[in-house]
Length: 203
Image (cartoon, helix red, strand yellow):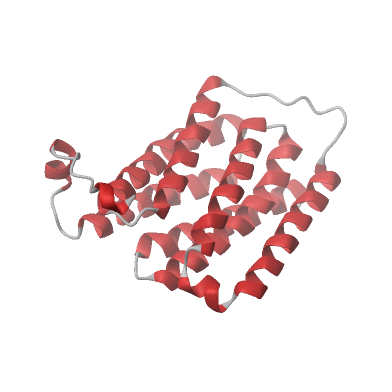
């Protein structure tokens, strides 16, 4: 298996693990471990995206990495593992740069489409607002994930990205699971009709 396929597979696996953990919504530990998995995936997928010339995905991975750090540092698990977490972040960043230098080629032309940029923005916003402890904000975040990954499925088919496509399909499930968990049995249809009861104190 080529190195790009390995990176795609490992990145997709780590992303699926992270998505599964945070969609459980069962406390601080799941959020911490979920975003640690996400940062692992971001490092791998940054190199992969660079190797295939998909600059929109590469920028998205950088944004995810930066936005994921405040979420991790806001958890109690971080307070108990501060030194190890900082060491991990340094190692993850270093590995990402090393892998990118290995897979990058001088002849590769970076390309993007507007739909890829829009999809990346939706995914980044969804990730960012996960830090707010408010069910309505998080529900919106999961909805953005769902829409973004639905689009990524079509992009994966177009570009022949098998593992990335599988990851996106799995994200549809975790997004729905996350929404159900946040609403805690309340009707999604009712929430859609009445979504603007976000408490400002949660900010």
